Amino acid sequence: MKGDVRHRWLRLLTLPVMLIAVTLWGGENPIKVPGSASTRIGLYVADLATGDVIYDVNSQSPFVPASIMKALTSASALTTRSASDRFATEVVLTGDVKKRRAAGNLVVRCVGDPTIESSHFDNVSGFADSIVAAVRSLGIDEIGGTVVIDEELVPDDGVPSGWVDEDIVWPYGTAHHGANFYDNKFILSVPGNRMKPYVPDLVVSHTPGKGALTVDRDRNSEVVRTKGTPRRQGESMTISIPYPAKAMRHEIISRLRDAGVKVGDAKADASDYETLVYTQFSPELIEVLRSLMFRSDNMMAEAMLRNLSPGSTRAQAARSEIDMWELRDIDTDNIVVEDGSGLSRNDRLTPRFLAEVFTWMASHFKAAEYASLFPRAGMEGTMKNFLRDTPLQGRVAFKTGSMKGVQSYAGYLLGNDGLPTHVVVVMVNGFTCGRATLKTAIEDMLLHTFAPGYERPVKKAAPKKAVAKKSSKKKPAAKAPAKKSKSKSKKSTRK
Image 1 (cartoon, rainbow, N blue to C red):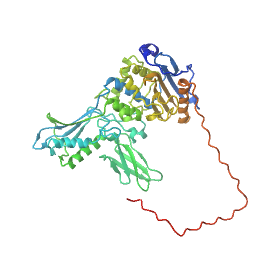
Image 2 (spheres, one colour):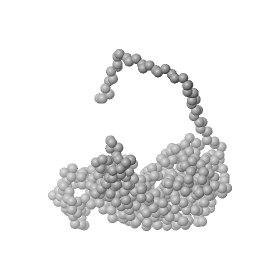
Image 3 (spheres, helix red, strand yellow):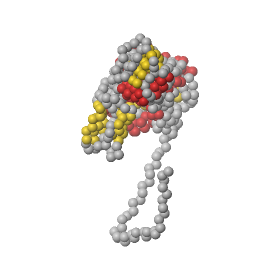
Image 4 (cartoon, helix red, strand yellow):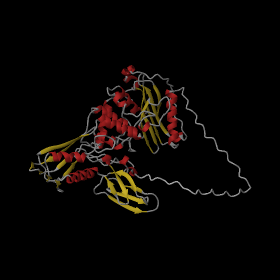
């Protein structure tokens, strides 16, 4: 194995050490759960300052990582780009502009920005309105061509093959595109098939049936199938947009026409002459990374992977990522990267590989920024309820990952100054016990290791209510209470 933690990071000896006791264990697996014989557990825990390995269980075996893949994607993005970088989406008019008329098209040059009209950020809404205002400020009343959404800089790969079919229709399973709009999701209301935002060319096919309403959609299809019986008062569901560029184009054309700007339906001929109309900037890279790590946003993670190699396919971007870590002297044997989010069942990471990445990042000048991307235990994001009200609340910063049969945690133990002191990677595949049972076992391992004197408070069972014995004698029927002759009038609550 390349780059042993113990020898490669001697400079980390200067890191402040968290003032807690640490229990050293041997090679035995310390995570005990029912059905452990069929459960595959990988574990790697090491002290960054000394290089001491506290746990090493199946650390070089490949596991399905689930969403802890996002921690790798974020590390790759943060070390190849400035934390203040932004996506810049330019909008141009092609052709001559004469007598308040633009002869060509209004072209949106998409670069894969995942934040346009996103509900997760401030100051990214009003994209179409900003374009309209910019066009009107140029004194233009007519666009001779039409609105063109240019996605050539981000080749469309569809969704990865390892994504499960039933995930595709839901917002967490939406694909990343060159043009991304409203988080690539919309609200479908039935009956009536109303859409917000409106999605052109989308067909809703309903099959009546008993039971609750269900919905699905095939890969790369624009047909949404619903089945069952909607609630009497109607029903709304949030689902993914197959091709967000169509929704973006429709909204821009509609807003232009509402503002009195004539827009054609046919694309005008290409022209070498262009006028910059408007530029949409995303939030800074560090903000996007923190948002996707805290919320575990799959689409935004895919955007970060693709941004590692602009203009390339997803597979090429993944290959460049693996090559990058190989050049950093980290062993990439058994590593398979099919996506940036970890939603693919084809992804494979080893606990040792991810620990090596975390160790490398802890010595980087962006170490503090990277550590800030991980939600803190008992406080934030997907870690809000993990290790809550224990000595490790706020001192453990992990990315979580879960899917059927998979539970993972990966990140750092933090010192008093908020900087990493230990790397921790836990990967569990094929467990058969309850997920809550497994999480408790992982919490217990961490508490026994980093807070060995702590004992969880024992939850007291609620006292059982005494059951009164039934009498064999019949009780006389109770008399109805006498009716009051006067009733108090109720004041109207309407205003």
